[in-house]
Length: 248
Image (cartoon, rainbow, N blue to C red; front, side, top):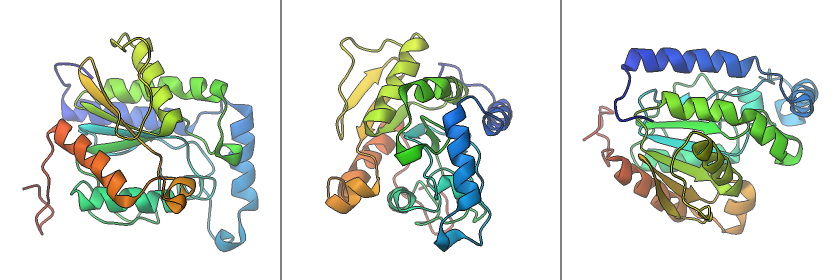
């Protein structure tokens, strides 16, 4: 994120190069073994579907003003479909909220080739491979940190980062601090709705839309939508879409 944004074509090309590098990554033996085991063994409900079984790059608008940072792909969600937050309950919660706010062109997405389009938003994960028990290690987080740093550096249009959960919050703060951004000391504490200006961007926290949080009511749809609406407003994005799909 810089004061002078690079040309859109250059940004898109840089994101495509990063995508190719992420997809080929095999840095973490435990994650490589797990993601590939899951892709081979599958689960009964998806036994006839091909699994992606590789790391997941970011997805969304190359000119995004908001970057949403999640934890890691779900074993039978993104690790199956090949796109972050696609094909699982967490994604259902996220896409519905983004659609309500005019930031996505549909309220659900089950396949990577379904044409879902985000406007002003890009999504990435702190860890790019599905981890066992959905719990990456600190070493695995740090091994993936350069990818998140590259996302942030390329997305020089982004002025808001939404961190989903404590893990995503900590990952973002570490990457920003390493980049030389003026992260406050002591480090800001995570909380739902927490908001911290850091240099040229604003970091906003939200509970992760995991089933553990949404099924128990720790995170409700209105709570989630309120945080994303705040991010939209801070980023200066329009608050609605017309029937033709254009911002109003």
